[in-house]
Length: 271
Ligand SMILES: NC(=O)c1ccc[n+]([C@@H]2O[C@H](COP(=O)([O-])OP(=O)(O)OC[C@H]3O[C@@H](n4cnc5c(N)ncnc54)[C@H](OP(=O)(O)O)[C@@H]3O)[C@@H](O)[C@H]2O)c1
Image (cartoon, rainbow, N blue to C red; front, side, top):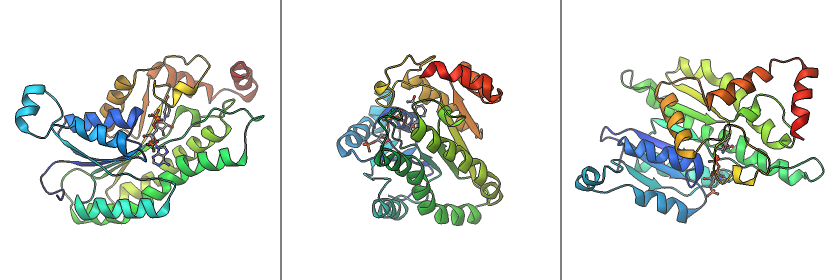
């Protein structure tokens, strides 16, 4: 099955739970073919089973019109990413949209933190995105240069408002997310000049297995379905930055322009 049926092809990493899972279902509702990646094969199979196979089912159930193909992958493993991308290109074609969403978060104070904690966070969140990006970029560039009409390929990096500025107990996680946002900003002009769009998604708090680990109050926390819809809608407009919920992300944007003494006075309360 090659991507020549006119349906958009979307590759999503971290699609086995949370935001990635919810966004995958939205693209599939819209008729796209989704290649869903993560390590958990069982969860990916459950996601794939949501997509209905026949048009009759789709009409009767008002369910998913597209298809979801599970593609197990560990973004920390070079071979897994290289062979996964080869499978996508050989079997489905060049993706129209690539959502690099796989992420790892383990809230940790400096008392508890270890080198392994930093290495794992960096390997999944930052190197994982770079690994996937570099594996698919040559095909994306070639495809974009060869077709001058039609929608431009779209790379999406899922970062976080935790990357706006440093927050207590998020030394490893926050710094990987700051790096991702910087990465997206750095690549924007070069990618645009070869016909590729790029977006960065900066969510506030969203109720997923990732935030279930937090023991502190999470202001303006969103249900995952609402967050996925906000993400999907912003990406459809090809905004460079997609953020949600707006009230929280504006507070975080404001905080990063505060003078350090005021900023640290505010963030000290988060200890
Ligand atoms: N939830 C929030 O409040 C929030 C806020 C800001 C940003 N974000 C970002 O949003 C993204 C999605 O997070 P989420 O909240 O939806 O968390 P989640 O439910 O824990 O999802 C994380 C996803 O990443 C995958 N993953 C983890 N390690 C991987 C690896 N080595 N290789 C491949 N896939 C891997 C997981 O699948 P497997 O375990 O099956 O591999 C899972 O599908 C993350 O980048 C996160 O940093 C979330």
